[in-house]
Image (tube, each protein chain N blue to C red):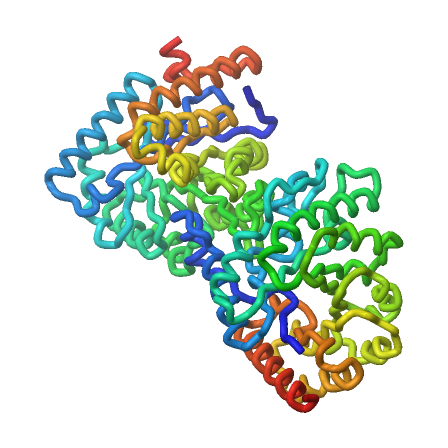
Length: 296
Length: 309
């Protein structure tokens, strides 16, 4: 059983750092990346991310994809291309800073979610645009493939509107990747799960803490994938006790066995205080160890 | 070359006129003085050198008809009195000056000093920006400079929309936009700096923002595009053996923003002025001729185009 995170960590540059970024041309997010990695490692998380500190899950990608123009919301104004990696430098830096104490996961916003967030002024229809974006994000993933232990594609939009071409979409998105792939869909996915289990992914990651009834749906399904078990509420500062978290993990461990579980928060931690995020991760790691011991 | 439906304000900064319809008035240069290690601590030698450079600026301005205002570099509180003393002694009494002060605390010291020594009417405050502290803003309201640069740096969104947002609404950082804050503090003359960023951080948006700002607010607009050139990694290496190339690149960057309608350029160290002043004059020649031919703008008599055709 491994512990991981979904993506974002609440480390933000101070006003002084931001102004230094302007006056002295320093990378104002370098410190945030270092802090995110340090805190995830100190909390004991097995598979960490770079903290996604450069922006929200849309902007990080939109500002680097050719054909997307940032004008308030991203506008798709031309054919979408990716001349160079969006996140390779930060991924390598995170790996360097982790120094073998944790593996690295690459969270990538999914094409359906990202496309539907943008204002489309180029593609004739959504399907064409989403598939074009899938090819772009696949290219990003292939840049990162040699350097990460795990991928996670984030598709919260699946819970809003599930595309009929989802299987083809995921095949395009994951083509050529050599590492395990997780699909993270937050929100109420009870009715969606029977479709999701048919997708060519290795891990299905969902918000089990915020949706306690979700596990009852999951355990009735004949699913091949491992489970990304969101077991910590990600958007309130109150820190759950080790016991509370362990109680959330235990039924899943009983049903699936610990080998098929990835333990993580429900979603990104960007919106809570740093102190809360760290304490939640610490308790989550402790709870996972406790369950691992119980089931050995 | 460019014209705006929005009326473009003309401001008088001492004897220098800035702004107005594109092509009417010459672009104003803000060369930086007392910058760098050689001027870290003022002494008789480097003051003499500074006077030489100041005289050079006056000479080049006379030859090229490019008006200028000095941008005085002040990094620490202990430099405030000495540098402002020096400047107010060497410059003509009516000449305005700008202060290049990245640190909020030091900007407060500048305001206090200028307030005490009756210099607020000559001071162009550089700048009102996101890094302004509460105490700085409070002081700005009691020791109000006549003129200020307002810097459109938005760390969250470096697109033109983001830069507009920080001036217009505060972009979530402040309750109101930086322009309103400047006006509420009582600053009469506002100059907008689009905020030069490095390559890879939407550098071109600093240029593209110029006509957008002028169309929206009608205020004199420019930027220190020199900072993008200075931070360019390739040039940092290349210039070690080709220093002239750096001056040329610097001059080109200023010409580029003038072509987009800039009313002022902040071109960096005064040492480069032999390249910068003629380049600014050249760019101004094109812009003025285009404004006259195509838009029927009456070019000012003191403009390089009027003098050097």
